[in-house]
Structures are given as C-alpha cells and as structure tokens.
Image (cartoon, rainbow, N blue to C red):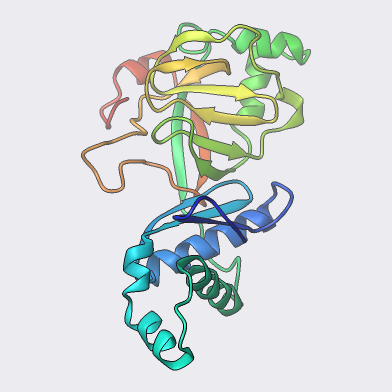
Length: 242
C-alpha cells in the first residue's frame, strides 16, 4: 500500500495483468463496497491496483478512532487508519475468485461503414475479414477495468491471431458503439470521442447510460461475448441504442 496525496491509498494486487490479479482486485473492491469504512468516498479498480479515496476529517471523528485515541493517548493519522482497515479486509478475503461473473452479449455489425479498419486488421494478420470476425467472436472476454471514457471497457482475452497495433494517427471522432483493437486488447467506445484503436465493427447497444445507476452497462469482472449481426439487424435494432 502507498499514499496518493493525503486523501487516497493505492493497494497493489499483483505485478502482472492476468486473471488471478484481477480476481484480487475484484474481491477487494466488492468487499469494500459491501463493507465501507467511515469516510470512504470512492473505490477505483484498475488492472493491478485498487485506489481508495477517503475523507480524512470523517475518519478522524469516527468512533473507532476516538476509542483508539483515548486508549493510546495519541491520535492515529487517517492514512494509518485506512491502511489498518485495508489490511484487515485483505486478511478476511480467503475465498478470492469464487464469484460468478456476469456474461453480457454484445451484438456487433462488422466491417463496412461500421468497421472501417476490419480490412486493415485482416491484412496485417494475413487473414480474410471473415476470419477476423470469426476469431473475434469466439472467446469470452474479461472486463479488466472501465476507464479512458465513461463506460469504456478494457477487455482481455483477444487472440494473438488478430492482435494489431494502434493507428499511427488517431481519428478525431469515433462513433459511440465502435468496437476496436489496440495491440492485444479489444474494447468498445461508449461515447463519440477521438481515438487510435483499429475499428472493426459497431454495436447498437448503449454502453454509457447516464440516467441509470450504475451508468455503465459493463462493470469490471463481467465477461463479454460478441455476436455478429447483419447491417439490417443493426439498423432495425429495437434495444437500447448507442
């Protein structure tokens, strides 16, 4: 654990980006959501870390802190109190990785105006566009974290067969719902934003829903399964659109 200023703590769950580290991140984040300590403001899970934001004033006035101050004659620092709580939380997490992830199916129209870089991804990997689509829709992808833009999922599990570097010159605007590849990751743009990922398709689903709670369709720990749909299905989609 290490401080991030005087209102946050960063807890490292592992050195490498893999499913075991992600399980630790998910387990701690879930535990803190269900068992918040006084003064907890926000929990931010990432690939290998969990950042915990807190209010030092609230922590100092919490009954547990007052009891310790009276008993020991000194006032513990808020950072020390948070670290103590997090250490206790980690010790209680003896069943890491037992949660059942939710699987979310994402319909995608590949190629054409919806996926302008599908041909380039195929060319760089000596494949046909249809082969890229087949490979991209085979695995279930783990949502490692949400970031970059509201609701943007970083997905792990992309086959090396279609791994493709980012574009050398990012686009100024990528439509909401665009599905892209960047190196060994795939992801979905929830809102229209600049970006340099290789765009291979687009989903009609809205990933960022600001009027809902939570506003992101996908959450860290979810599994994503892509399903190819036709242009006609995309245009006639009746669900919540991007």
